[in-house]
Length: 245
Ligand code: SAM
Image (cartoon, rainbow, N blue to C red; front, side, top):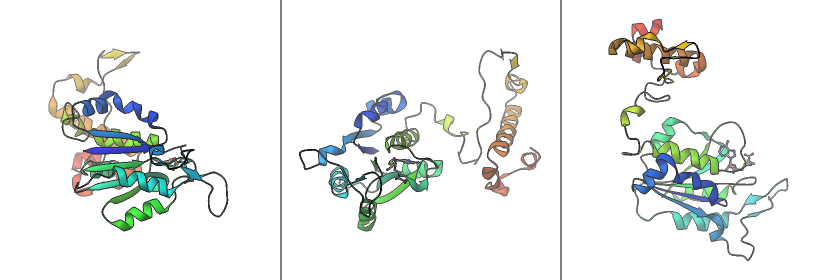
């Protein structure tokens, strides 16, 4: 997969050289390119913003500069290209969205700053029809820029790409996976710490009991912390012991 991130603070994305994403890049599993939006400015001051039509506080990012940048970074030919525009007024980013994005050939992340990007940028690419446009939000709060949102998307998508996570089994039971539950609590050595013991069942060696305990814990934790997720569960996917839990 190819991912292009365009920002006026490319240095913000340096974290993508680290850890699993950095390794995926070095291993050739992910073609990640970070660009400085100012490369596409045409004036001496490398201007990317201007005052809002209609008045009001703050500055708005210019569509002409963004248009040149996006046109340039969109790859020729790939079957599925997605332009991702982080904004607090977008659809909420979920694991389902991330799974869908992991199937694309190219993602282009347009990191806004100031009061955001002129609305015609998303409108223009949506109208063109040769690229999907998704305006997405990380949550109901306002950040200073889209770079953090870009980091979130790259990290969440990259770990779903084949070969990025060493043991793909670790993806199966994770929170927000296909079961629609939060993950059960996890423990490691030492078995006793700060007066707290690891639940006995986990050291019993009885795989069936461990699996049952984990399922019950996942259900109980989800019910307590995210009743909205429990309400969304398919009743056909629950067995009698699930209901009791
Ligand atoms: N004036 C905008 C509004 O009220 O909707 C907020 C602009 S914000 C200060 C600047 C940039 O930060 C946005 O263009 C977007 O790229 C990013 N941003 C802020 N909050 C975000 C969120 N919750 N999710 C995704 N991106 C966000």
